Image (cartoon, rainbow, N blue to C red; front, side):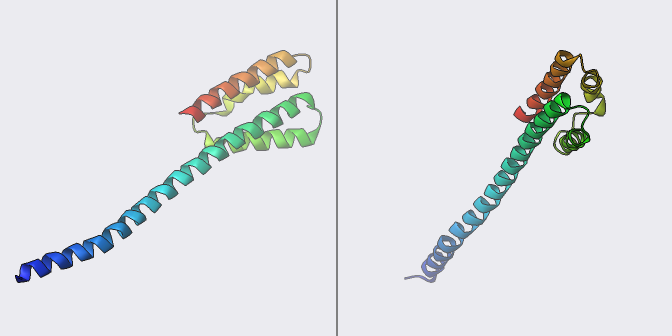
Length: 123
């Protein structure tokens, strides 16, 4: 046997050992990135769900300070996950919710906010 056949055999041996290791490392890095994206999206959905619950509670129990604190806390959490929103988006809901006889308008405004934010989750 020639010397180059030994070289080829050694190269094949080394590549058969290293190739699965490199493939596993690359796959693990990819899985970690996918998991981070999934966790971010779940937190985004949870923040929106929490906002909806707190906004409804705020609307029904406007005079209680605890509901106001929870509502504004949930509102602030939305800014962490949704980049396209501004405080101006929430002014119609806040205005309508302060007027106790205007419950239907406040519900409609809340629906508009939720619709807008839901579209960003689907992107």
